[in-house]
Amino acid sequence: MTKPVLNPWKQFRQQVVQALLEGSGKDLSGFLERPAKPEHGDLGCTAAFSMAKEQRRNPAEIAKELAKIDSSRFPLIEKVVTQGPYVNFYISIKPYRQLVIDTLQRLGDQYGKSDTFQGIHAVVESPAVNPNNPWHIGHARNAVLGDTIARVLGKVGYDVTRMDYINDLGLQIAVVYWGLKHLTKEPLKGKYDQALGRVYVEAHEKHDKAEVERYLQLMEKGNNEVAREVREMSERCLRAHHKTASRLGVQHDLLVWESDIAHSGLFAEALEKILESPNIKRLSEGEKAGCLVVDLSAYEEFRQLKDTEKILIRSNGVATYVAKDVAFHLWKFGIIKDPFKYRQFRRKRGSTEPLWTTTQKGKPGRFKPANVIFNVIGMPQSFPQRTVYLVLETLGYHKASEGYYHLAYEFVTLPDKRFSGRRGTWIGFSTDAVVREATRRARREVKARNPNESNRFYRRVAEAIGAASVRYSLLKVAVEKQITFRWDEILNFDGNAAPYLMYTHARASSILRKQAAPERANLDVLSAPREAELVKLIGRFPDMLLRIVEGIQREKWGTRIELFKLAEYTYKLSVAFNSFYNHCPVLKAESKDLIAARLLLVDACQQVLRNALTLLGIHPLERI
Image (cartoon, rainbow, N blue to C red; front, side, top):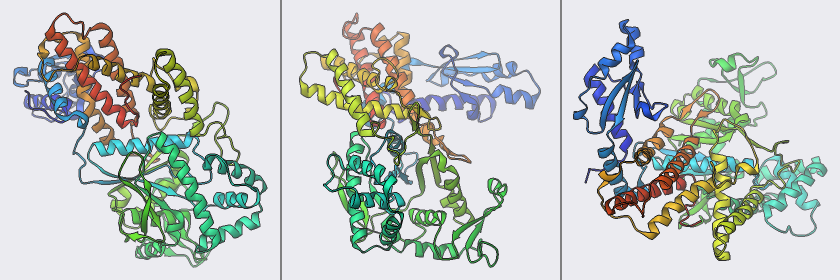
């Protein structure tokens, strides 16, 4: 048996890099890319272009020199072919196939795992939905992005804490509390967040501003009946949110409440740190007299503004949003000591692990400081988010600033309008309503395909497909692209949608139920091009995950992350498997050796599909 590795594709790539190094004396790894057409090889080297400029020579001649490689010394390289200035490398499929299958048999559901980022603690904050409304489908995009990012980070070695920030002191909370007091005579019926959201729509139009302001002051003061009732209302709404989250497979580790931050002493502690910086000054004249400010004129985007001095503390001693966020992140990074107390909020669904929450009466010491932070927040917040990490840098906290990532995403909209909690445009498009309708439509399709199954089967499968369909539709699109919600793009059993991926996994499972894959087989009998294509895709899975994470790059506004490539890969693997299935009989192959080898290939593909679907937050079904 070939010695397994964690990343078969990386093994092939390393041999290509070594071959080029021995031939040219240079590390040309930065010039490697996958050719657009499979017939042009598996890896191409474009270094001849750059070297031609340096040497003032014909790039095609340089390419021929680079291609003079003794491929017999590199078992995973079958041949090297030049095409003009390009040097194309082809995988030697027999040893590579054995390497892939052996690795998968050894690792199973751990295939794709890497220790590349081991020892780094990441905090992923998402979705921070206000506890006065249900999740609409736009909130769901935030939630599934955060959850999937956390899954992928964990797969490549990060220690991940999934955090949710709960704003229970905002104006909208005071407004809905006013609505509960003045507009409702009976206890709310139905799912609490849905009912509360309807109260908010009405209260937004009718509330008494003076009384709402009084509620706000009492909420911020704390330790009174209004503050206690608001927290109870908010927690009840959040528990309803978590029912929605569970349907989508979204989990958290820690809840941090704004009211707990306000009464924890965190800001006073942070202010001491802020005042230590020589870049902070208190103005003595002008309209900002008495304010503590930080000058951000060193940064181009602020230098273009009329006013480059950002207020942190107003003259009346009140902290600005930026100052509060800076203080919050000083805690996240462990720059100031943890002031919070903690208690269990509930058990995570399907887990023995508890979900923890900050509280004003509990036990200390539940939070591990972060090395990096990923805040999943909408694109319109790019300027405030950049302001926060530039303030951290200006204050001298360079590591914290460098480890601060704003994962900006575009919103989900309806064809003719945007979602608004105040106007109630979410009604009919709450995440609950969308998942419920997706489940209803999925049940109809599943029943048509399986007319003799039980109602229990229809319900279980439809619920899984309904949730997966919503989740996948929000993940397959690049984060910087807006999504327009349309039903015909969510449920599709034959295209790039969750049902197709799940059906492919179930198809592979069906074959293996009829005949289990052997432990070993003669893989040399696999000679069809579709078999080779499938092997190459399976071998790329760990490398694809690693490149998603290694490619995360903070930009001026937001962060570049190609998370959609996980969905793209899973779809391509499904297409390749179905093409193999339709053209390469498995159980009716012409020999026992070929049956055994193809069963091993089916088993490998099923495992990778299961691993990929799990990372996407999709439950891989054995039958559909």
